[in-house]
Image (cartoon, rainbow, N blue to C red; front, side, top):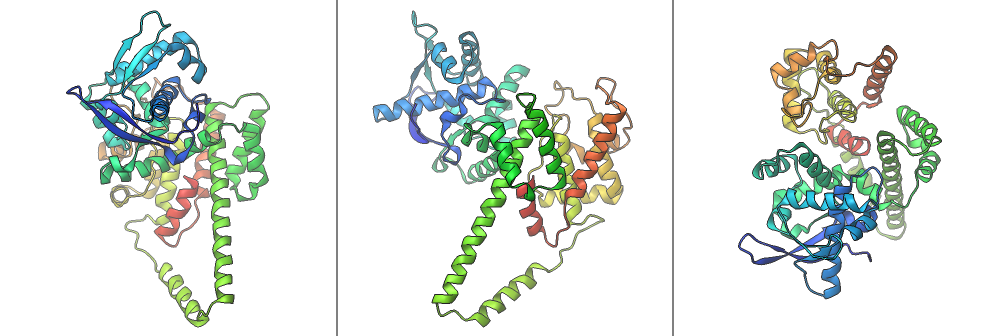
Length: 426
C-alpha cells in the first residue's frame, strides 16, 4: 500500500445517506508503519489498516468510497497474525461501533464494510472526558470490549482533519498527539531495531540524567537476552524521544544564533537596544512567583513525576499538565495535612487493589484528592490481601526509585521554566 497520509472518505448517516469526511495521519507519519508493530494489540492495528484501505481505494478511484471489501486473509497478511484471529478482530470492530458488515459468500471470509456515524464520532474523541462520554452513550460494558476500545483509542494513527472539528476538539487533539508522541515516534521509526535505538541514545548519553543512564544500562543488559519486555521498550522509546528533543532544540538554538550573528554583521541593528531588550526580558523572567501553602514550583512537578512513575505499572492515568485547578487541589491537601503526607499517600497507591468492575482505573487524580480517599490512601501500611506483595528487596528498590524520581526534578525560577522541563521529561 503506497504512502497516503490524508484522504476524503464517505460514511453512512443514521438516515441511510452518505456524508464525506477528511481523515489525516497524525504528524504526517506513514500509517502503513503501524500495521505490524510489536507491543501493539491487533485490534488497533486492524483499525489503522481498515481506515488506510478506505483512503487507498478513495485515492485509487479518485472519489470518496463509502465501502470496502476486507477479507480475513488480507487483514491477517497485512498486520501479521492468523486468519482465524483476523475474523475475531473484524467481529470486535463490528460490535464496538455497530457497523454494517455484509458477508460475501464463497470469498474466504470477505466482508463489505461500511463506516458509520458512530465510528466517525469516535474519531473526534481526543480527551478522557469525551472518551468516557462515548462509552456511556453507547453503553459499552463488556470488559473485553472496553479493553479493545482503549487499545484503539491509544494506538490509532488516523484522525479527522481540523476543519472537521470544533475548537475544543482541536485543542484536545493537539494535546492527545503530544501525549502520545512516544507511540507516534515508534510508528515513524518502525524500521529501527532496539539495538539501533540503544546505540543512538548511547552516543548522546551526556544528555541523560543519572537515573536515565541507569535505565539505559538495564535496557542494554536486557536486550542481550532477546526481545525487550513492554515496560523496558516503552522506557527505551521515551529515552530516544528525549535525546531527539534535546538535539532538535540545540540545533534550533544554533540556527537562531547564526541568524542573529548574520543580522548583526550585515544589518544596521542598534546593539545598545538589543542588549537593553535582552536585559529587560531576563529581568522579567526572574520575577518570583507566589506559591501558596508549603508547595513550591519544584514540589508540584516532583509530585507529578512520582505520580506518573507509579502510573507506569498500575492502572492509573498519567498527569500531563499542571493546571491551576490541580494546583489548588494539591494546596488544599497540603494545608490540611502536609507536603510529606502528600508524597507518602502517592507512594501508598501501590498498596491498593484494582477492581475493574467498580472503577476503570485503580485511582485517578480526581479521586485521589478527595478527602476520604486521600486519608484512606495515606493511612495504608500494607498491601491489600488481593494484591501480590513485594518481597523485602523489591520494597527497598521501589523506595530508592521513588526517591530518585523526586530528586531528579531540578529547582525552577518560574512556572514557564518548569513547563519547558516537563515537556522534555514527562
